[in-house]
Length: 103
Image 1 (cartoon, rainbow, N blue to C red):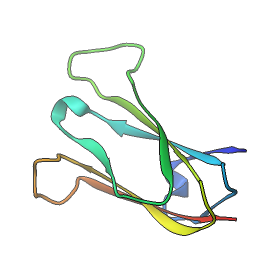
Image 2: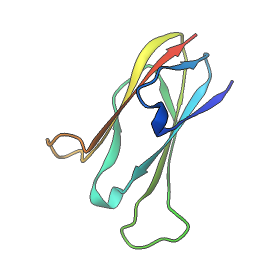
Image 3: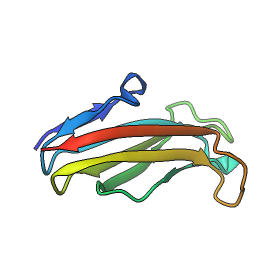
Image 4: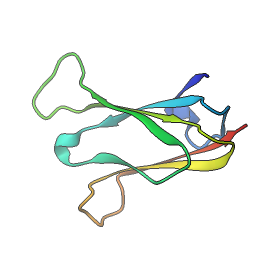
């Protein structure tokens, strides 16, 4: 079982995993603005979700959303994330797609 940290340079590239491997993403987020990362349903199982503030905290300051996903079965897919406000119909502020192959 391995953990792969996905960085912005990896977005759009196919990630190869084995069953029970995990991937970790650290994404900038400021929930006080209402913008949160939304995850499209996928075959990867979310196994971690944490918001981490920076060490020097100011009112309304953003931080990092740390998400972890586990590969539970073989196959291919695309993990899709959108930075948006749940209640708005406006286009997302940011889209991320991470194709993967589980062997």
